[in-house]
Length: 364
Image 1 (cartoon, rainbow, N blue to C red):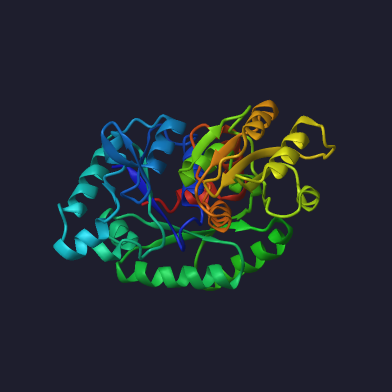
Image 2: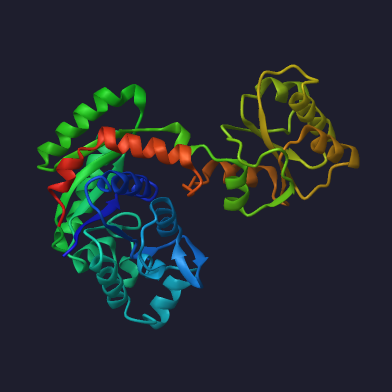
C-alpha cells in the first residue's frame, strides 16, 4: 500500500504548491514511484477534454508523473458549482469519485502526495472540506502557514481544531515566506511557540521575492487582456508598476528597473518618453518590461510606430487606470512548467530548509 501525506495550508496562497513541488523533488531521491492528486481544484484548465486543476498539470509536466490526468484532479469547482450544490445538491457522489481516483493513483505508486485547496475548512459548503477529504483518504496532514510569529501559530491552532474534530492527525507544520532579514529571530521563536503546543515543525522557509515576480505574459494570461504588440519578449520580469498619469518628467523620475507602465491610451507624450528610454534616446538606467494602455483609448499612429521600433510589449484594456493597476498589484503569480529557474529555487530551498527525514517518519 502506498504511503501518503496531505498538504494543506492555513490560508489560500500560503505555498501549498511550492511545498508540494519541492517535496516531490526530494522524495524522488528516496522513492521510485510517486503519485500526485489534488482532490478538489478551484483553478482549472481543459486537458484531454477534462477540467483539470492547473497544479496537477504543473506537477505532471515538471516530474513526468504517470497517472491518469483525470485521477490527478477528480473534482474541479467551476463557476456556479457552489450555488448549484446549495440549490439542488450534488450532481454525483464526489466523495466516491475522490476515493476511486486516489485508489487508482495509489495502486501503482510507493508514495502519493495529496494537495488540498486552502485551509482545513475550505470545501465545507459542499461537505468536502480539506479535513473531511484527509479523513476520507486516511492521510496525515502537513499544515503550511506564512511568516510572522503569533499569526501562524494562531492560524495553525484554528485549523488543528477542525482536523481534530474529523479525527485527522496533524503530522507537522511548515512556516513559509519568512522575511530574510528576520529569518533567524522568527524561525527560532515560532518554532519554540509551535513546539510548546506539542506540534512538530518540519521547516521554516524564507521568502523568495523572485517567486512572486510576474512576467508580461503571466499578467496578460492572468488578467485576460489583449496583446497589442508582443515586443521582443513577453517573458521579461515585472518588478515595479508605475501609473503614467502625471507629468512626463515626474513619471520618468519614478521609473525603476523592470517597470511596467500603465498609461492612458491617449497619452502620446508619455508613450514617446517610455519608448525613448527603451531605445536609449533618454538616458535612464532602467529597463521597461512593458506597457498597458488603458481606458480603451487608441494611441496615434506615430505612437504605435514608436512601440514597434522600441520593441516593447504592449497590452491594451478598456479598464480605468485604478482598476487595472489594482488587478496587477493583487494578482497571484502561479508557477508554470516552463519556469525552470523558479522551480530550481524551490527545489533547493525545500531540500535545504525542510527536514525531509522528519517528514518521512510521519507518512501515513
